[in-house]
Length: 247
Image (cartoon, rainbow, N blue to C red; front, top):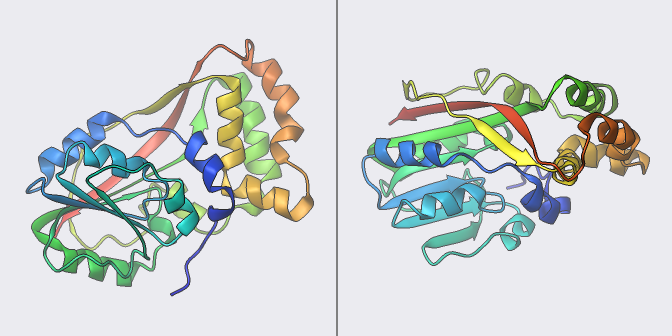
């Protein structure tokens, strides 16, 4: 089947530029799952969540339809990376304790994916999907970043972005839903790291492809002025949204 491929062309940039999910999230998921034998990380990208799961589960099945993303994943002895769509998982029935989807659920064919989740999870198994959208540093940096996010790249975000902005509340989630604790997504980045993150946006890449101009370069001078010491790490925070449930 075809898939919505918006990151293969800059998979290496994506790997280096994205925030890391909090350890507390994976500790909670491991505790809430009925066991720690097998986790399936669907739409795993470069394996960022897969690696965290591998520290807590005996085996991780990490799947993504993008061969380029899988090629940029770090190998682990207990991670089985597969180039396959989330809607067609190679795992056997009732085999997984946990299914995770990190910043990817909005791209899936939801009826087909959820059917696979119900097939693959053990009774009482847990599914968890999370997302993050806009970020914050301080008023001055945020004002410049807002110009990039809305004024420049706004027309280049795809409609699925609305689901990310809503914290996935606009997506179907046909499971016995749980109320998870709140988790903070925060990175301490230099300006160079923050600029790399802005360039990793699918809308930034789509703007560049359409116009031949890097949109981040158009605001970089103003961002440097707002940031201050470019080498000084600053806290970058995102609103982090998690939906989880049991079969």
